[in-house]
Amino acid sequence: MKPMQQPPEHRLASLRSVRLSSAEREALRSLLLAKMREARVLREAIPSPWPPFFHAKRFQAALLLGVIIVSYGSSAALAAEGALPGDVLYPVKTRVVEPLARLVAARTPTAKADFEATLLDRRLREAEALLDDEETLDAPLREAVRERIRAQSARAEETERRAGGELPPSVLRSATSTTVTATSSPARLEDDRRPERDSDKRERDKRRTERAVRDVLKEHKRILEKLEIRTDDDDKKDGNDGDGADDEKNERRKKQSDRDDN
Amino acid sequence: MKDGPLDKELLAAYDAYADAIFRHCCFKTGEREAARDMTQDVFLRAWTSMQRQPIRNMRAFLYRIADNLVIDWYRRRKPESLDALMDEGFEPTEGKNRIEEEAEVALALAKLAKLDERDREIITLRFVEGFSPREIGEILGQHENTISVRLYRALKRFRALFQ
Image 1 (tube, chains in turn cyan, green):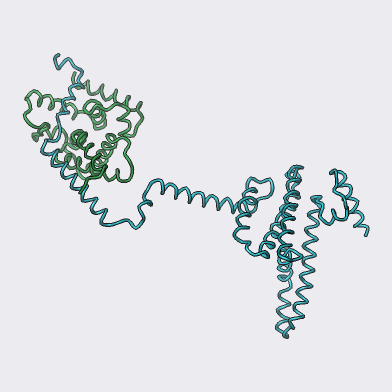
Image 2: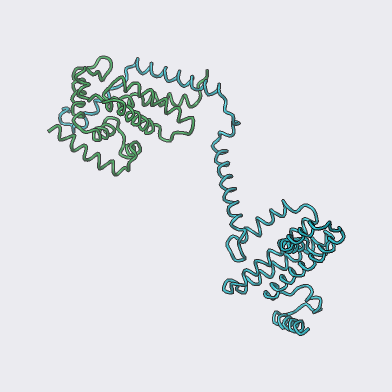
């Protein structure tokens, strides 16, 4: 075949003959090999401060994943703190954050009782917040909230019984903290005027605490009533197990009116 | 010192593609010496990259490194044209070449020199190195279809030079 009959681009194949000479190719190869060895010697002479597994891609990926999970998890946990029943993040709060906190924070029986009472208080506050929004608080959610309060109430009482106390310490503490804040300034002035006797101080603190606890319990009672939850006291007074929901409600209303009359 | 598996892989790539990379750099820079230095740099850089991650398509990867080096080289200095290379007695082939072959190479170079840089690159990748449009796309970072269109137009201009 004559060369000129080929398409012009076929003539370009001749350019493949442009190449390194044998000597050049060999020289470059040797140089390359020498440089690779030199680089390896340098690398081995300056060891990495990290252990060998640290350089493995799989380890680095796992590390990255861990960081993402921790940062995502902690931000979700933070976001979940303000979640209410029915919110997407609420299970994160009750099933992840709180059980973890229970494991970490509550070590002694008193601390456990304190913790469970705090959670009970929290459940009640959540319920109260929900009560403001009748649309969200539909029947199933209302029942779920009640159930959660009942369960937490039982847990708080159980831990409190084990701790040997009568009232949940957290209720005491939250009560005193609010009251003390309000009255701390006059108390300090009193201290400045004359040294107070320890027995007087204890007596006053006790009275203040009792008053505050009563306030808090009253507040809790109010929320429970709004939720139409029968307390243990009611059950004991009733002396029955309340067959139907309607019976229960009627009974409850009756008792409420009796109390109001008194 | 014993060579590692990556060294062997790199040397195998060198044996297979050194000439093609050298040629690629040669056509782009118009300087044999510069092309030789670049060829060495291309394989050293590839070896360094291989320490970090495996190279999926070694051939395309080498061309990409070569193109980057050529860009760097262009920034540093004004290149000679292929015409100038021939005027200076450019020796494209080694050993005892027939006069006819030399004449053929000179003609091909002369025609290539008349194309613009983009056409020249795509034409040589396709008809000198034998890359498929898909492979050229990988090297140049463009879609296969874009390459086919570019190739069609470049080829039209190249053929026109022979009429």
